[in-house]
Amino acid sequence: MKKLLALILTAIMLLSLAACDNSSISNDTDGTTDENLNNTNEDITTNNEQSKPSDDLKNKIDVSKITSSTEFSEGKAWVRCGEMTSDEYTTLYCINKTGEILFTVTNTFLNSPSPFYNGLSVVPIMIDGEGVYCICDENGNVTKPSDIGATEFLIKSEQSYNLFEDGYIFAKKTEATFSGSSVTAAILNSSLEFIVGYSEEVLALYEDYIYSYYYNGYLYNINEYYNEYKVFDIKAGKEIDDVSAFVSSFEPEYASDMWDWDSQSCFYYDSLASTFTVTLDLSEYSETIFRMYPFESGKAPLVFKSADKAFFTVIKEDGSFCFEPVELSGNSWCDVKTYNGKYLVVNEGYNKDVLETFDVNGKIAEAEITVTGLVPSVKFCDDVIHISSTDMNCYYSLELEPLF
Figure 1 (cartoon, rainbow, N blue to C red):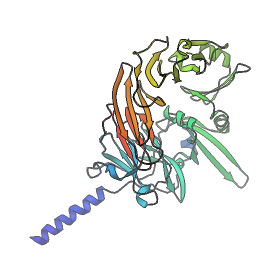
Figure 2 (tube, rainbow, N blue to C red; figure 1 turned 60 degrees about the vertical axis):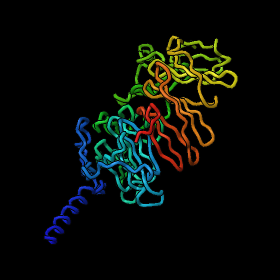
Figure 3 (tube, one colour; figure 1 turned 180 degrees about the horizontal axis):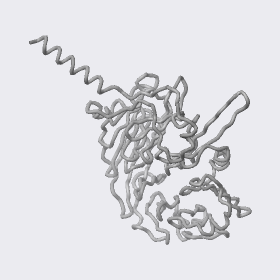
Figure 4 (tube, rainbow, N blue to C red; figure 1 turned 90 degrees about the horizontal axis):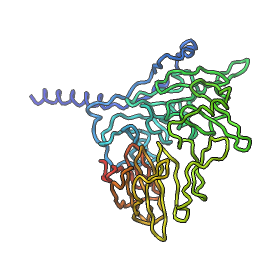
């Protein structure tokens, strides 16, 4: 009987180990043909082994072992455990808002993965001894650049991530033969379908516009002195011919989407107008306005400073307050972070941060958080507050309660 029981326990242990196997990245070369790549609506199928969540993987992360972490996005965040010099650190854990491990990605290098946008994240993976930025979906499936016939995904600058957030991914392909070489680029959507095929023109446009302004599918340059515009329509993969007609007919979702501001004079102005046009004059508060912020979805946070006190409110496009300015706790040198109509006010102090959360109706919560380690970073995304430093990685809700 004891021998039979031992055999049963051994079989169960082997099954558990198989279920807990982490995801791995295949290093096989891609066999995608040019014919497939030219089909702009064809789904991409990778040859990577996939990391699938199992009952054994659905355990909670040990918060005390987290040594690196990202903010939450679309209900998920990335964390690492172990010291930076350890093999354990090369594993990325994807967790949800209760701290459960959804899946893992192994063999990564030390750069941070991106947040999830449209179900995708950019993850840094070692392939054949080189660091490669790959695309990971919310189920743990990984797509390498070679899976779509590319050399690399062009996701390096802050503007590239703005495009990625809106569902536009640029891929670069370098080809070389004995007679010469060519470098081209293509544009994919968040389903990893080609919306614009590989061409030298797309690469040239990317390089020309990537450090310019971006809004809702358009990259644009402004020469304010000559009042000249150049606009790159990403969906079409080409520049707009009649820019003047486009600008005159352009209607952003909110008028304030195109506003810039002058904090010295306390007014917002229309950056697309043909003449300098003040759209919101706050000069009546010029003596007390401490910090102005950009409008998002028709509203903007505003901080006042009077003597040694600071006050916070949210203003509308017509200059009215969403609520009467609220006196802030902590010191007056605060910063404001915005997410989807919610606001986090951070007052940094010695070994402590005073955090206050607001929505358009007023104050939600306040808490004093003890901070350990050097240079803490406080981020606000997906209605979750993320605090990280050399010695701490933690998450708080809008009510300033620990998330898990």
